[in-house]
Structure formats: C-alpha cells, structure tokens
Image 1 (cartoon, rainbow, N blue to C red):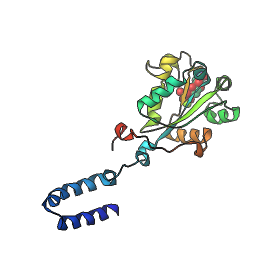
Image 2 (image 1 turned 60 degrees about the vertical axis):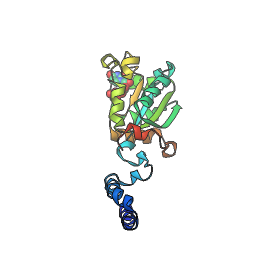
Image 3 (image 1 turned 135 degrees about the vertical axis):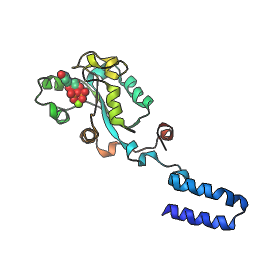
Length: 201
Ligand code: UDP
Ligand code: MG
C-alpha cells in the first residue's frame, strides 16, 4: 500500500519535474522497492521477529555474593544484546520447582534448590538476534570443569553445584521461563539507538 503510493507520487514527479528529477528517480524507486519503508524513516529493529528473540539469564546466589553482577551484565551488553527486564529477588521454592521441573527426580535436586534459595538472584531478560543460543555459548558448559575459558562459567567457577549463572536452553524454554519470572508489564520495549549497527538492516 505504502509502496504503491510512493510509486504514484514518484511518477507524478517524473512527469512534472525537471531533467535532474527524471535522471535520479528510477534509481530511487528501485531502492524503495528493494529496501521498503526503512529507507524513508528510521525503522524500529525491534519490530523484526528474529531480533525480538528473548532469553532469561539469572545470576545465581554465588554470583551475587561474589559481586560478579556487574561483570556478567557487561558481557551481555558488550556482545550487543539489549536488556529488557531486570530484578533482584529471593526465589521461592514454588518458582524454583517450576523452573527446574525437569530435574525434580535428579539426586542433586534438593541441594540445587537449597543453593538457589541461599541468597538473592539477579534475573534478567536479554533480547537480540539468536540470543538464546549465543547466551548458552557465553555461559559455557554446565560443569565449569568442562567450560571453556572465556565463558562465564569457565572464567568464574570451578564446581557444577556453584556455577554462577543460568541461561535458557531453547527459545520455547525461554518463553516459559520469562513468563514464570516476569510479568509482561515488567519487560520494556525500547529502541536501542545502536541496533542498526549491531545487525543487518
Ligand atoms: N546441577 C548440579 N549438579 C549436576 C547437574 C546440574 O548441581 O550434576 C545444577 C547446576 O546448578 C545446573 C542446574 O543444576 O546449572 C541445572 O542443570 P541443567 O542440566 O539444566 O544445566 P544448565 O542448563 O544450567 O547448564
Ligand atoms: Mg538447564
């Protein structure tokens, strides 16, 4: 619809404008159809589905106690992701049993819940292209002994029972976890000015 009206306006200028207009219009029109309305005003990247992918990241009680919050947030900011939700809280057993529902039968489940309720967590939602998979790579292997240096777990932890950080492991899992930890009203849709320099237009 918009492209049709651009086309009509351009045609009018082609016939009523001077020779300069006639020379430059065809190229302009081609670009308009190739790139769409984004050329005519600043398009919000957040309206595109793949950059709206979101994941849940939580700094676990050991990470908070060890004052690693700032360094961990910095890694996600530096990578180019956008923070859309953040809170510090003491987790309840109910939320944790839902969050770790697939681990309830594991021998380490009770000690995991004790650990996760031993102090405050910092829970965040990060948004951006491929954020779920990239966050898992940044976080590293579940067992820090096998985590690569350069990952959060590989740099800051040594034991599986104190591995500093959680990140959702799939897009579907992330959606469920975000709903569990956040209300929709607590997540902010905002345009980060550098989005056009961190992803394809
Ligand atoms: N965990 C543990 N012992 C184990 C395996 C896991 O204490 O042998 C804890 C650890 O904190 C881990 C969490 O349980 O992060 C969830 O396990 P999962 O397999 O989902 O690993 P993650 O997705 O966190 O890498
Ligand atoms: Mg997991």
